[in-house]
Length: 144
Image 1 (cartoon, rainbow, N blue to C red):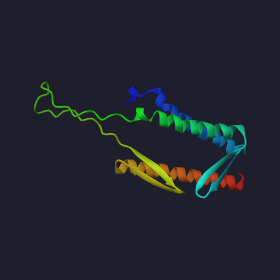
Image 2 (image 1 turned 180 degrees about the vertical axis):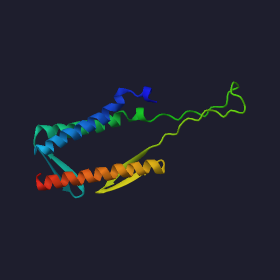
Image 3 (image 1 turned 60 degrees about the vertical axis):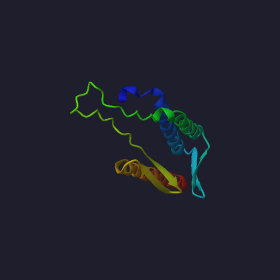
Image 4 (image 1 turned 30 degrees about the vertical axis):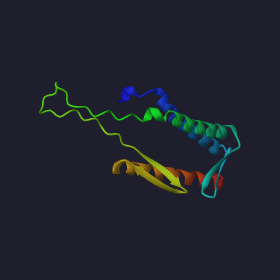
């Protein structure tokens, strides 16, 4: 499975992580501000690092969206047991794909997944993102 990973599939996540890092540097240098408009977080860029972070973050989402078809694989057609397979041996089982996600409705993470284990991991991701948002908000308000 690891051998068929194409480098272009990593472009979106790498750009998003680079954007978050650049935005964090901008926050630490006082070049970015964080505020809330209704329930939506708004980042204000006043310097180069924060502007670069926002641009990389947006480019990462576009790259992730454009490479999304390469993440979704078509399900293989069910194969009939061949004549070469002995009758007592079951056909090989292909692993099922598991998926999940987090959607924020205001400050509340809504998680979903194809099974309970994935949904629990998405809940952990949602909680970490929520805590990160709260920390950045507090840093922005107190001017740390």
